[in-house]
Length: 93
Image 1 (cartoon, rainbow, N blue to C red):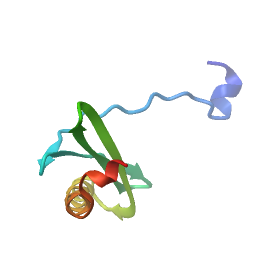
Image 2 (tube, rainbow, N blue to C red):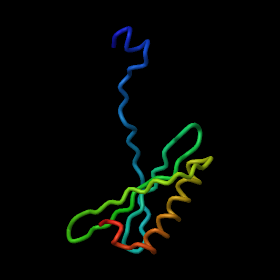
Image 3 (tube, rainbow, N blue to C red):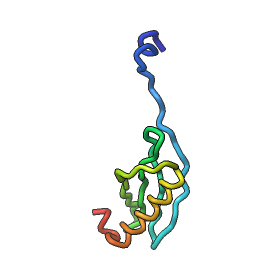
Image 4 (cartoon, rainbow, N blue to C red):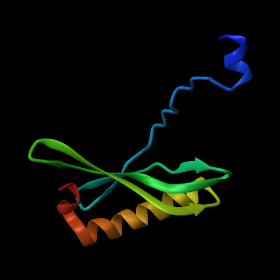
């Protein structure tokens, strides 16, 4: 890497790959994937379900920030369950 790249912070970084264990709920799989932001964690994740032989995914991101990763995961799972109860398969349209 060249001098100017280091000087000006042009560093390519690979995205962090995290193995997340899914929580099953009513036939859906919930993947809590909080995003680290300034020492806090943004509520985020995915809701997935197999429909008509195809894996459907709904990305779930909220504006809420939590102080710990565990709190963000718990909050996301609870919100995702509510979202599933309210919307069902229509979330994939």
